[in-house]
Image (tube, rainbow, N blue to C red; front, side, top):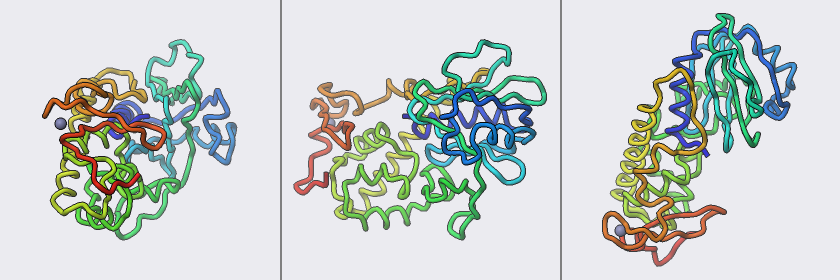
Length: 291
Ligand SMILES: [Zn+2]
């Protein structure tokens, strides 16, 4: 599942290679890719033709292209979706679900997806409310700011987090509280902040919340820097794995390996049909834990 750093890498690629260009033609090669778009494949393609891409934007894990006439092309990458920019004459792989050509005849944009969980839809913008000056596409208007953007309010986050009665990791994954933190980076941030994933949010002290937020920002910005360096070519090629950050992982995926801080083997617990990794010594399980 792509997380914020991966999606930001895609966004930066789209900004560089697609913004400012006008769509000539769209081929929808698999109808499922526009299954949420009410206009259907032919209507989607017709509505995209002639549109100019104004901006490539992101909030958390959500990515969209702002188009002229105040609409957005919202891209959900799902588990395995990729947006690839390249030579328009290169062979069409069987996983390409939609292909966009541009009026300048330059590189085309392809949405590929092995599993077709990802999708594209053309949507209007929601009017920005007073708390958040950014305009967001309507289907994601409820998504909270991510901790890397200016609209993120740390005090408001701390207040809302500690009013909840849930486990801290579950709260970190709640995109209406804080966006852009997925399973991998939640485990890494909790390890850095020395907090157990099941720690009840209502028991968090002010200092622990700010330690956690610092850790979330550190983890995300390190991953962003790592992703940024791998992206300089013509091809926007980012998938759902966070491969380039693997070497820096301290907790996630390291079951049985020694904690780099204290040497205790990292433990894996089942969590929401997935896993949580933590150090039982640095991140002691609270006496009262939320599932
Ligand atoms: Zn440890």
